[in-house]
Image 1 (tube, rainbow, N blue to C red):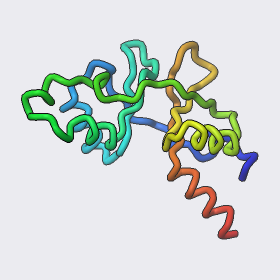
Image 2 (cartoon, rainbow, N blue to C red):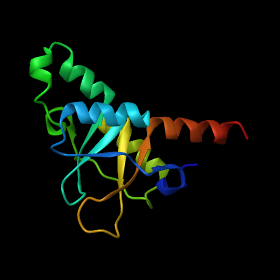
Image 3 (spheres, one colour):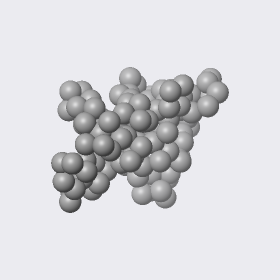
Length: 136
């Protein structure tokens, strides 16, 4: 499993929201698509940050409705700083997740200039792969 490539187990077709999208639209997108994470992108499609359901709960926990409504994606996202490419190994992805204490990595394509997301690799994807490997 260690030598498998990220592309082999990553989730393709990630859900994105605009960097400046209202928080209500971000939440609606997550609920509608039944996902716990979206990638915030700039107008040219570059990854700017990740918004998880935990990010939303932590940000909104003590806020009144009046203070929540004007928030935008950029106000709740975790800025994008960690990157991985489809041809990186699963072993490398695990090291990055542990080292950076994150549950997801946005996968960027080396074919595009900038930070164009092509997939996402979650800790759940890794656990699923570990199970497959151990259950053989």
